[in-house]
Amino acid sequence: MIRNISHTFWEDREIEDQPAPVKLTLIWMLTTGLTDSLGVVSVSPRRFSLETSLKPEWLDKTVAALPGILISFGCQIWIRNYIRHQYGQGQSLARNGICKTLRVRLQKHPEDIRTTIEKLHPELSSTTPHLRPTPGGRGG
Image 1 (cartoon, rainbow, N blue to C red):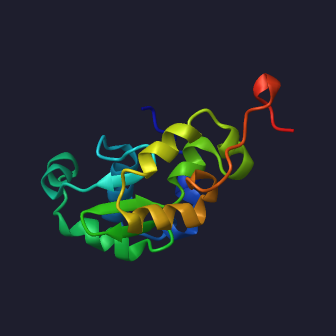
Image 2: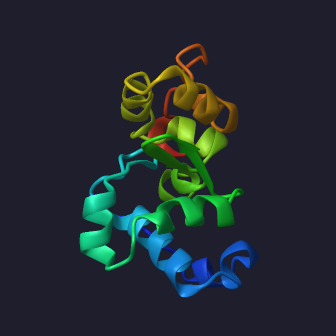
């Protein structure tokens, strides 16, 4: 999967003032193959260290430094704005062709992760009525 990272990444106030290891850790989370299509990173401290040359404790330090961006679930970390930046949000996400796939993938995660993601993205909930794309793929 090709990931999109906007140039505005560097302008985010929460990121702007962070030390270089925090920024590198977040970029690693955004781009590693360990991050699924929902933005959930299955953390491997060994692989993290190998790929970034940082000590594994930078994973925890980064989560602590970026509470508005990252939520830790033990060995998994969710990047809060990942879905919005990659696919859209609200009605545009609901109409996006990936939405059905994301719903299926979300159900494979533990309940605490599912509940947290569904709060920010209710359109991914299995109980939310599914919107059908309009002709021509545009919203109405």
